[in-house]
Amino acid sequence: MEIEFYKPTVLDIPQMQELVKPEVDKGIILLRTEDEMATTIRSYIVVKVDGKMAGFTATHIHSPRMAEVRSLIVDEKYRGLGLGKKLVDKCVEEAKFYGIKQVLSLTYEKNFFLNCGFREIPKEEIPEQKIWADCIKCKLFPICNEVAMVKDIA
Image (tube, rainbow, N blue to C red):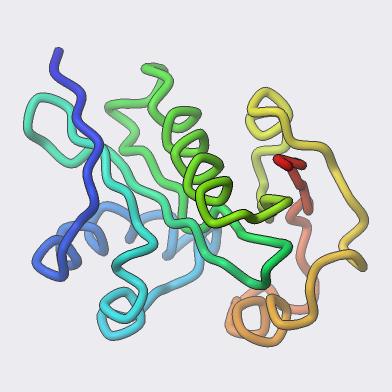
């Protein structure tokens, strides 16, 4: 089995949107438009297994102090291979590279992120810019049962 991590180009966006569509339809992951993904394409990392796109995530920087693991998805047929954890690790590495002190995740998968070294925090600690830039677009806002989690990295 050949596993490859790479930075995508805008040509990968349609395939990325197709991969994440079931989770977007369920309200688990926020919809990112083609234009929004294009303007943030540098923040994404994709994983391929045997030449097929298996998952991706993005490292979104909110401030000099905090980045976020965003839009984490692994195709169901590739789950159980540790790809999700490796994608999160890639986000943490990128945040460290930029001197970020903490990585945030808003998730329904608390145990997964606990296993990645994150800890739960009160939602009141989430940066205001996150709430008004992303959360307000969610079909579940303001009644959300996602868990806010952070990992201190510096």
